[in-house]
Length: 162
Image (cartoon, rainbow, N blue to C red; front, side):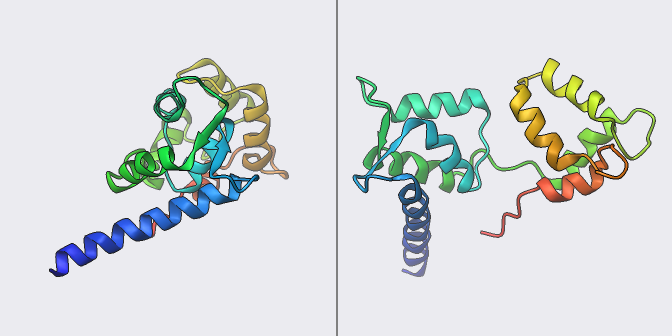
């Protein structure tokens, strides 16, 4: 019986987190949110899907005739499943640091903003100029004009204590 109680408690607490996150963006208080806010809601819950995965989630949530809004009753079961299955977990600090170290071929302990911009706009899932500007504003050390990536990684990682 204790196992059933804890499973129910976990589901209830998870659904409360989902409801609270959804409500922040439910500006009309009608249990709907703008489809463009779904990524923000999902990330606020500690999940970090790729843009392709996010597109798939949104496609699953949208009505057959898209309205531009997502209803809570469709969002809740999908998001509950994602959270309980621990999908789209953030990358660990160690793994992120290793990625920066691979880019830092001279082992300087930092990257030039131009280097990082080149990597992030020309490889994989490219960043937009706006995303790069936003990231560099947080990443570049104002005194040295370089990205001290150990400090930046510490700032970027998500503390998953839940």
